[in-house]
Image 1 (tube, rainbow, N blue to C red):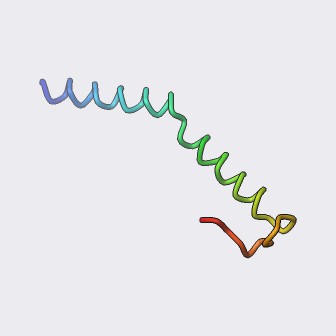
Image 2 (cartoon, rainbow, N blue to C red):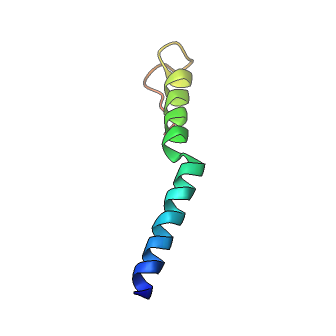
Length: 51
C-alpha cells in the first residue's frame, strides 16, 4: 500500500515538473534556432550544423 502511494506521488511530481519545465517546447525552440542560424542563408551554409 505504501509503495502505491509513493509511486503515485512520484508520478504526480514528475508530471507537474514536466508541465512546468516544458522540455518539448524548449527542444522545439532549440531546433528552430539551429535551423534559423545554420540554414542556407547563414554563413557556413546548411552543411555547418552546430550539434
